Image (cartoon, rainbow, N blue to C red; front, side, top):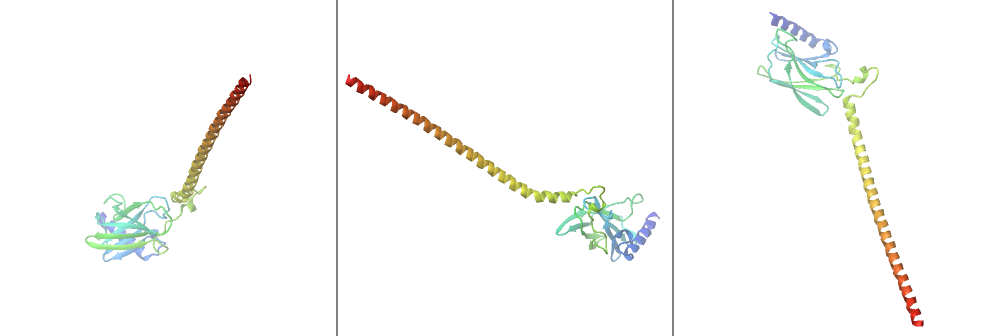
Length: 229
């Protein structure tokens, strides 16, 4: 009785989602494939960059919430030219907490903008290949947190990463220039030391030669005087 009542509620909710504008009814998008009905959106809306969220998939099969999906279906999340596959898991316990048929793929959208959810696999042996893209007529894009930050707007982790990426080349270049300057200074210092050492050696040799010259001159003078005597 409980499952049938839950199925009626889920089906009624899904019908409302398929009929109402995208801005209404949690801003999710509904699509039908035969007797399978899928309602998709972000698990937490509005979705903000850098905040934990999930792909939410509500499944109704033959008018009843699908509670035994298993691992036959997964979702690929795309942003721009990047994509990653995630596993869906039930966000409910039959006869207990949660809404039957509510499945989630948990992730953190790190950039604001448009996201696409591509579901592939099988449900009860039926092939599934459905794509849902955020937008004004489906479900909301991921928004920047700056518009809700108070009192100070702090950069997101993504913005910090971008700044670091921008600064790394400059810092690397500055480091290389400093290293080259230090190497040049060491080489110049070594050259100056070598020049000083050479000058000192030359001065010593000059003194020795001068001393020898004085000694020879004194010897010659003494020799001349002895002969004169």
